[in-house]
Length: 257
Ligand code: 4HQ
Image 1: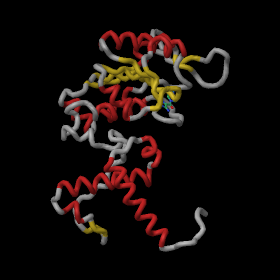
Image 2: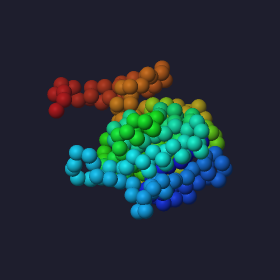
Image 3: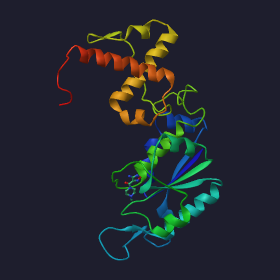
Image 4: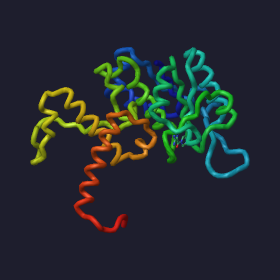
């Protein structure tokens, strides 16, 4: 995967390229990544990238010419790449989109600043408009970093343990199970026995139950959407009976609040 970012602040990406999984993926040639300054494509002496909006109002708009030149030049050097504009108007990013983006040979991520990008550039030169969520950033750079981060860890060989990405939260529409490491007793709080038993089948059962119940308690919306298998239904029924037993100890009380 080749990532090229178009931005007026390419230095913001230096720390992304130089830490953790992304750094290692670059070192092992699993991904190729660079940030290009849109200003380099401005023709005027002061390398201006913004201008006042037609129709008036406060704020500035990204000028079309430097941005279009940057996108076209970068597309030439990355054949087969798709262009992505980071914008609140885009489809809201999720794990499925990360998987789809990971199947591209290259991604050109276009980061706007100011009030946004001239509409004609969006329309003519952008393949996908993506939002990272319903809130307002000062620029697309942090959004681009999130996309690069989520996509990189799906590239085969980018993570240490080859299958680690598959088992994570969301790839199975369930949250991750609880995790524990040494010590076995931390401030009086014990690690669940079964995890130290070495019974692999029992451990897998415990982990699925942890996943299902954490999802129920923290993100019930995910369970409503999910097609449940027999094991997952069995777990929810077990806890339904548990809750009914607790309620049966207090019969005749008012329901609700
Ligand atoms: N932006 N998801 C860039 C965002 C945003 C988002 C606002 C994009 C400012 C110039 N980008 N413009 N949310 O808030 O991707």
